[in-house]
Length: 458
Image 1 (cartoon, rainbow, N blue to C red):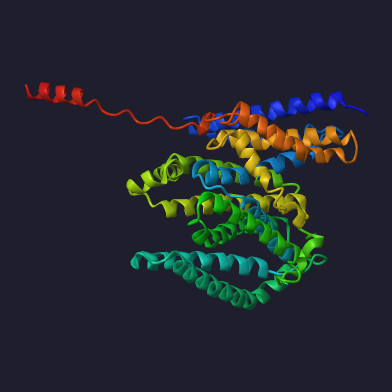
Image 2 (image 1 turned 30 degrees about the horizontal axis):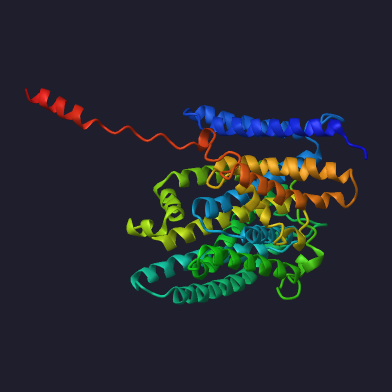
């Protein structure tokens, strides 16, 4: 056995640098000065970007490290969404990986069609999520008027509205698409709208559409299923992930998407090698900011109160069903965006990537980092990729071709030991920098105010 001690030491050093980088980024984000925040974020992005640029034969971060870094960013997006659902809201979900896959395939299909001269992917998907979102808003207003409407009746209305909105989007998209055909051209003869700049804009739209589509699917799925208890909800979400993967395997037969090629895997997805770090960094930063601000808002406190005690939350006038659904939808939105970034880094999608067994990874990560800890989730996601998927896989690979599969034995053993030694997770409730709970404003001293008023009266 050729044990590479140098690789081990270098990998440990890289993990330490990555954790220090995350600590610095979160610290800078928490600085009171806006100039320091903006400058720090730009510097944080530039440091990695420069490290990815080759200088002759020398490169600080090799392609292998780049892959781990991008996958760590996407895993963090997925895990933060799951932590919102399970860690903060207390709803045990095993469906996060399914929404990750939905986002990946949705965004990939949009950009694939665009680069092949077909604008229907962007037009139909964009119009569909817009119309479905409008329909959900209108039906929600109708449901408020008829208070006490059964959940299944509400679901029926939403489902019928979704079918109608989707049909309209398909018809309109097919009618408008020929206008874009001469502007897109083909891969061999691209038109004015089929270039590098246009592809970046289309990817941005595709990622947002993918996240919105995952969120809308989670809304329709979660509306009736969230009425179940937490354990039954977990079983239902596991079934959802299996159904999603089955549809991926049969996407070229059951679904009208021959370009996805079913179980053979989808190829030809545009790879955004030059800009993928920018998009991964941007979306990760936005998700961190959105989640942090939401958790410390009144909405976030209501979401957390549901986890602590549903009966007490109801007694305080909190709409438990609404906040369960809200956490589930936003968590799925994060996963969908993460899937879009992953698809355009890897350039190939296989249904096996979204197998329900692999879907346990985000759950393990948030337990490692600490349920209800944003910092723990971020640190554990990056640590997971660089240590377990990077270092451990390579070291086990040196022991034989079958040795890397032992990772799936080491994961549960490590998790079991962690639960015995430190059940609150590695970081527990510790938050770094920007993610720390904001200081509550000082309450005015009523006695001092009375004394001032009395002195003024004299």
